[in-house]
Length: 495
Image (cartoon, rainbow, N blue to C red; front, side, top):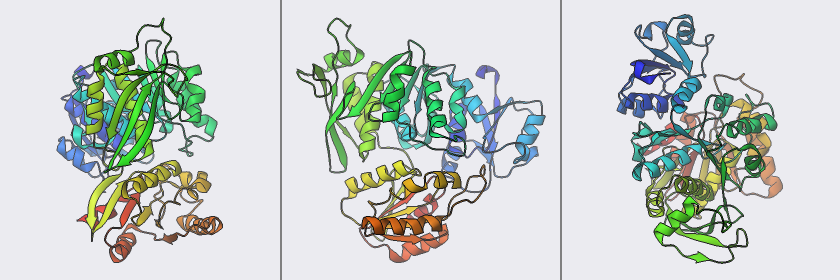
């Protein structure tokens, strides 16, 4: 696709996070972008308004500009469920799915894809921020608004393009990366991937596409990543871990004053090998060497002390991925250290919305058992023994059913738990499991494990808001978790 020949683009389902980031990127490239979606308000509305993308809040075949050069549609819809998609596919204007369009853009660049089950948005935004502030002028597309980047996307001015690459519906099949950051592999999207092996294979096939001159940054704390990385990547494999054997190792983790502190060391190389980018960075920084590195038992380089604003052990891991990639891109170590520390995060990721009657209201996108545990752990790290009330809005019936037993073990760190009715996907058959059933089984599990936790079923957002208004008090921490629209409760409370 030659973007120079495309002037006007229309996006069907423009409020989706992926569609919004692509729309903002294309608009920043100077294209005329408009689109349609439903009347419901989403977190992306503000980004679309800010970058001047006109949104028609109703699906109608008459919406589509007759002189559009390209129509892109979200695969949340198809010809049977959406009149605009049906009309577009039957018309003469070129039509692409979101993944196809993103692939067309990404594959023309030095594409760096951030993939994995968890942490993609934060890692994409963080790497993009470090690269941008360091002068590399990358294009960036992240699945949430990034205040320090002015939205979900940056057009950039170089060949670098960093994207959050979603594995759902195996969108990875459309992308040809030069480099990949693989955070983790943790079974998800059971409505599309029938088995764990099917899910894992999507990542295997993706990293096989990395060229010999490309590189993979792999989280060796993750057993599934460790199993597939070395044997499936033709390019250079760069590993990272916390207190374990890897190329980049974070250790001596500490948290205080709302920040995290840790040290990083870079592992052993054979003396006859040429200096690596990491050693070049270290030489510039004038860092010391030491003997007997814990990660390999041999010589290792100390990359020094790092500090980050984001809470949780998982964000130390995300930071390591950014450090390793930045070094590989020849960014000086002092710049990496500075801009890593400056990064303040994205929306919907441990985002403090404000206060209600002295209680802190937190919004977070966590919707998978692993993410929930990581979020609760991070909140405990940041807020200590303050009463933690977790409100969970389960996302999709298929995920809730497939990971039901894992959900039962993911909330133990909360003092009180509220569960809303499941936020169903437009793509799935409704039913098969209910939130009331999840609450009943959680009570049984808590009793077995002697966990003293009040678990409450509240069906709707409105009822949840009313309950919180009546019951939360000063110094409570209220965490609203879910990939749906649970954030609406927080917005109303803080307003």
